[in-house]
Length: 499
Image (cartoon, rainbow, N blue to C red; front, side, top):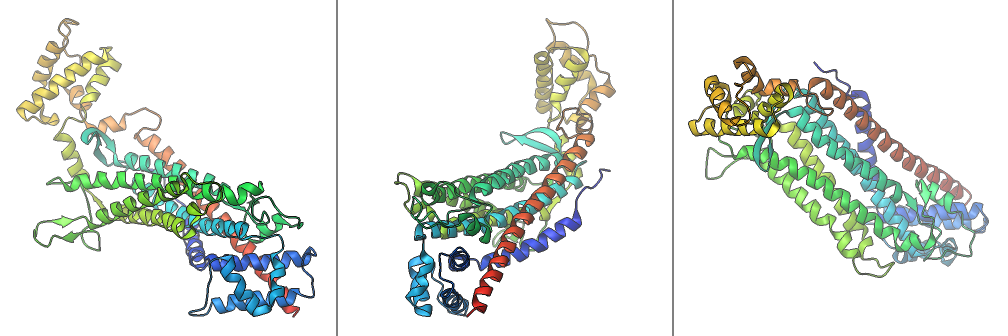
């Protein structure tokens, strides 16, 4: 029995923190972030002497009024600077525009879009972790489940189903790495760069970034609003596409079993997983697989959007910066992973039927050539020829591996090695049958990263560690954003008290 290294308490805490953050992020639309930028501008410019302290309370009151009205049912929540500002002027007079010192809709909206995309990226990271946890958990339960694996759509070799699942988990781990790396480039504030070359106002860009929960600023003022806001969604699109491709590959592998009269793996019936055909009473259609594949296809389609919109346009155009479209793209990847997680939790695997399937084909035949070369020094190609001839004979006579006559194996071997050797088949009958045993094949693998128990334990432990680290990374970034925004709200409230 492999030791479990899952971290249930940490995962429960992560799940709670994730749901809280996701609920908060749903309300953090463009209106919210423009409001936070205005709050931060009022606080920082007052402290730094760019806004007269005698006017600060009036400015703060105007900002608070617009935000309070926008938070009411049916209230106006404009998503652009030029539609937000008239509400500020109405609430506090033209003096409120003094907070616009050294600002532009270019740097403001670039920051808004980065903040919105940042929230969606963390939600995606959270679901990526959940789906990966489900993969690794199922792998742990199926270390000893031996099943056929397929290449070119054909049964190829026996394998541990747990090992197969860890292969998929490795793909998602790379997606998690890409997401963390892209996030570091996304998590930068453009505020204070104005249109493209800065301003004569001595703005405190670093403090503005801190208040909005960004870990750094976009260093080059031209890059801040012209290139960076386009690069970020394009890069995120590549991650969305990779996640969708990984999901589709898994789904299609499961779908293969639905074409079999006696599958070794299906979805548990009912509960939205399957549905009965309206015409054919024997059919149980895999609705969950179909919907997950469709969602993955939608994600791939949306992932191409930023790239196409950014193609052949001069710097600074807004085509690829669309916050709504880019947010939808990331949400499509999150939905795709949610579907995959449901599939994993709905799978019903029949180990006995999988072994029967292995015995109905010759997926263990390569092991004959390997053993003959490794143990008896027979050149691989000659051993491969022997195994191939043996399989041809077996299929022509409809003989299963477990029932193949040892006498026929000796005869075919003698013919296969004719001209190279006159020695008889060096394997005893017991060894011959053990070599064709898929369970023994997996148990005796020695390759680093293979499916043998000792390597499975090592890889499961490494996967657990990766998932725990990813969870801590998500938590740390969410905490920084939430605490920064809380600090901003607290400091802004002090301006209001001075009215």
